[in-house]
Length: 290
Image (cartoon, rainbow, N blue to C red):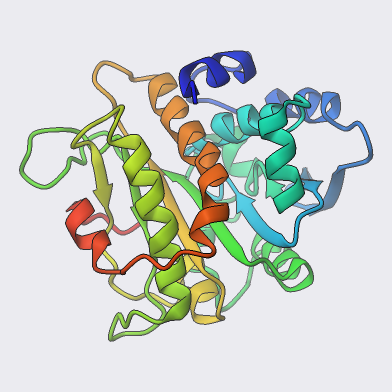
């Protein structure tokens, strides 16, 4: 499969690190062919929070981006991926027949506008998963409970300074199958997350060898990934990081798109057991906790 060609054919014309609701609203409206686009709630400052649902498959995937307002690389990649799902190609149709995707492109539109990690109340939404003090946190939890996903994809950016262990290479993309308890036990749900990460890593190593990191898996129940994992849903943290001389993260955006596109292989993973020990052989470690 020519991943580079597929990306170039579906890349949306949004660039840079400052991506706001105003940037993506017309793009989502353009894709709203059969009322896939919905307003699922409002932010602290009364900005709409959009969802986009597509596909008819039995395996349901919930994806959300810009939980932290200044982390927009994955939002660009998610829009590119939605373009792909709408291009009526045979590959796109395969995914849509096997999966149902429920995406929230910008969970924190106020933080996106202000270019801050926190929301308008200066609360880190990724530390609000238990108390649910913020409207954005409550919206995500409500969607999770209603949609009942089989997998959750938690899409973030990481800082440029992070590298892969002591290799001197940047952590261009990092993944994590979050812990669900203090002991960091590997259970069935976490193994499913790891299996997906192994496949994504296999693909990305062909393009960015030695530049895929594994996040610290210390447990924090206030983090959304740890919460959803503890609630029994396999969850995967994506971290878009630095690629050499790519300060606008346009190359990194492409690699996140590749990782999302690797879902084509998840159909096989769902019926093939991959040992969780592979994760420790595949990745070097970088230790930032988002």
